[in-house]
Length: 464
Image 1 (cartoon, rainbow, N blue to C red):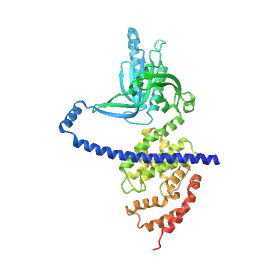
Image 2: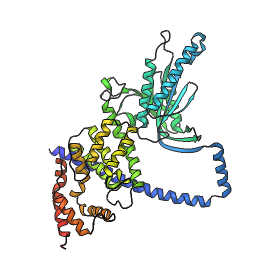
Image 3: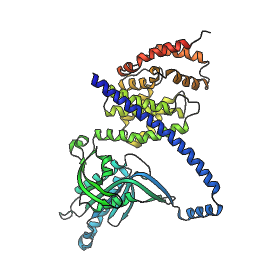
Image 4: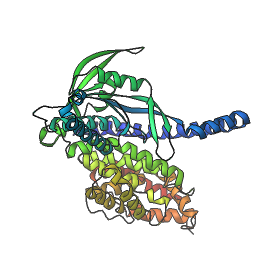
């Protein structure tokens, strides 16, 4: 029991640190944005009209602009077998099969939301994390590479011979993209990341997926990787390389290392959650009404952190934690649309957004049910709903309960939903006195302190 409590405390400390880091990052970004905005305005004032006109004229002529990506994963695939096109009697058959290969490769890239950059002769170039930034692009690109290899391995033979082979190189790092076109947008990427990925492809063997140590560190939990050797890189020293031999057995259907199973998808989505969280928190930051002093970004982050803490303590598996964190992220997002029915509007956002992130209909329905359970008065029907109800009202048993409660009063007061602070304290006393946490974890962590808060509120109340 003592060891379990120590592990729980360590997890709490880790989650609290992550929570604080997120607050600090948000504040830092806000300060940086204000500084950049000010610099931008000053720059506009200082620019000469002639120079500004020349720049605009150039943009109108070329339609080019530059974007920088801090993390993209570049793939180079060398397709060997073009020599067969010189054999007259088999050239048309080989060309038809090559077209089939390229069409399938395009389909695979689209499946994993990887952007095809271009085909250069017998070399196929693509990048993950472009044009839409995402945290999962190293995993996406490796999965695409495995599927490309699998397709070639299963491709029909011509006269018993295999015509086409593949050599793949993958590297993750920053890139600079030149964006051109207005109707049909195209991207051309440059930088060390591109050069290293190209060299990785050149240093590999037929049928091998060679990845850099940077990519390896980001995907090693999902894939079986074997050390391959070192490659000298100018100004960077020797770069370690690894060969990807397939998906880890525990994450693969029938342990064959080819197709991902449900565990893989859950683990992937737990990483992908960072992208969804950034999207929703940014929306809350920009679209929440100014009078939401309690139901703000901080409250959402608190609930996301708390459901994970309680969920692990209550013994939920990875998928359960994923369902809870996703529901917690959206549970107050509906406040951007309406106050009183925000839970319903949150579920509508879930139905609209989550299919694009690979959530199943069953998962989406479950997340919606969890969100609706937070509607007062709470009446949870399962452990997931109990956890989010406890997390949503976690502040009742915290030492900062009264100042947090006062932000909720201010929020309601500005909407004419409550009268005086004294009336609010009476209402809070009645509510808290009749409230009970549902989970064993919340009762253990918060119930004692909640009783102290009841006494503090009682002392604040004055008789009319």
